[in-house]
Image (cartoon, rainbow, N blue to C red):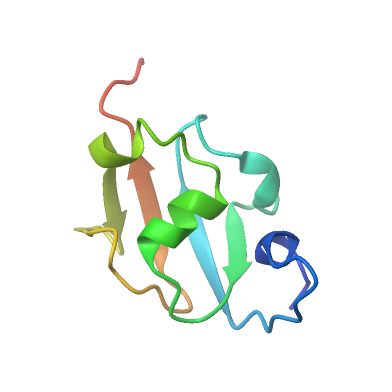
Length: 95
């Protein structure tokens, strides 16, 4: 696996990236951390709340975002695993 995303946040620490997840998210997150196909690599077992922090989700939005993991509602304490699909949905969006 390539060393993308999460390693940028582990200043000076060697971290093994052991899972790859697909992320669907609104423009309020930092999409530059995702690969061109919307995938992100991070440590196995990372919680959804930590992922929101890594993706620089604005603090005021975090409590009102609707998040799913593998198409099921998920709490911030949900542990992620390799192959998960995470969707982050803003309460208000245009179309």
